[in-house]
Length: 366
Image (cartoon, rainbow, N blue to C red):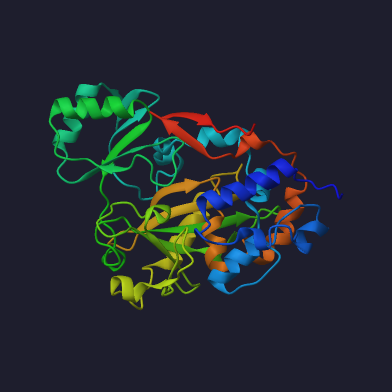
């Protein structure tokens, strides 16, 4: 039996993650599970052709270069981003410090490690409640540490002081109340109730140059009546072409069906406003993250055409991009896998994290 860099335990975890998070019910994953990718075998990794079987049915791109979930999360990500520093950058409350010149949603107040702040100054919970009362407009409350898939993101309802206090107690620590963003009308018409964002990727080469991974850029929109653009919870996603036009094909997790943006929303010929300006903003921001060579950015565009940062991701998911656009990293994959081969796997580094009242815990593999 050949020795592989990734262990059998990691290999089987990758299969489980794929089946639990991505795969549509009824897909016969066993048909090609035991067939291994020649591309990755040559480089020392054990990767099933099951991923090609699934993803190529959706996007028509057959390849032995589709990344498995274990290879991506246990080897690729740690080779590109410093995990010993990653946690220091997770709190969305520090974005205004990292990127003070980049447009972001206005914060009504922040709760950082259990302490309340407004405009950089410490306040108490009564002052936080008063700040909510003073703000004229819809607001969003959301956790700021160890979150994904829109967990805990809610619109702040019309609550009295006691109800607000109880809500803040429920979120406990590491959360923010901020304005509900008014996005560019071209983006809003895709789904008027959700903040329809773009997931975009930048990559820094070892020589320090930056690259925009445009084949994998996509726009996400929420389901009818939803405030979240979450693809894994009923929303849809469409690729963004290099010129900023949005493709008509709509993809969803756990579905083998590819639908039409025009038929679903009535929107056709959609172009991302100021797309080149958005990309330039990504490069400007990435230069301020010297420990991370690969970043997934969630951004939208304001009515003025300015890009607005929602969040950045140091462990961006790979399932969606491969589902829509083929093997992640495209022509850069050789370089990326060369870097991944240098990694000593540590499964605790990138296993999916969850939170309870803002406190992270790790799902350990037994």
